[in-house]
Length: 294
Image (tube, rainbow, N blue to C red; front, side, top):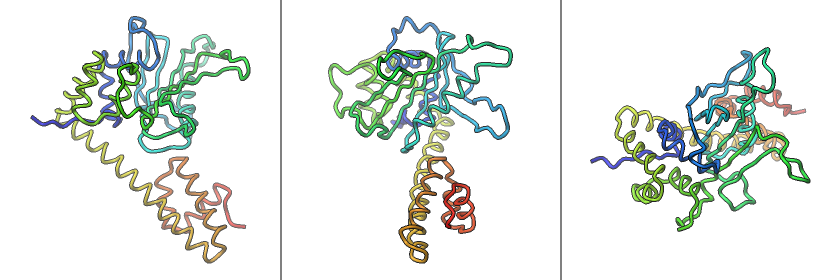
């Protein structure tokens, strides 16, 4: 029998696992720290966020859920480092919040919006814990301004290397999402019936030929994207050094490096790659970002 198993942290696989209601409920209970019996219903929603105007940025979420008909949840997985992740997650959660209201309605209709970020990189470099939770609070007295927005962040690289006897349900789920080997999955499934259900679903979809092709295509796209970014950055840096020799090495290199950083933060990877070989286009981007040479 084929022992192939998808990696749950590949967004395609995670989305498929979340179609399993038992796995979905167990995961939410662990992350949100609520009792299983308090989760009456979970429903998968359309992941496309509404665009009010043609020029609006389109939002596409990984997994969007409605829990108990009063809490909307956005679950996102990010494998490559993105320094502006906090801004991105705030943007998407804000769009999800605003999308709830239509003309003529009042503010009482708003549901609580919760963002769950599963990151395969370290976002908070000065912190050791793999899990963080954020609310909007008063600075000195700590009381909550509103409970309508909540952010949960799971940093997979910070997970303890060894599984402890007293591991929390959240840690077990994070270990499951980060797992790649059958032995890891088997051990975690024995510790939690909801993870066991997720594992059983993972085994089923891993043997589905069409789903496996879609998964492998997604995994390849992620690898290609990461490689393209590395090469584009290297090309940009090399071009910056060469241009710097002609008109002030340090000044020009920093100017191009700044442009590269702006393009990466804006996720304009195609423009980043083109700018590495098209000097005229690169200069247009310089002017757009206020970096044109004086």
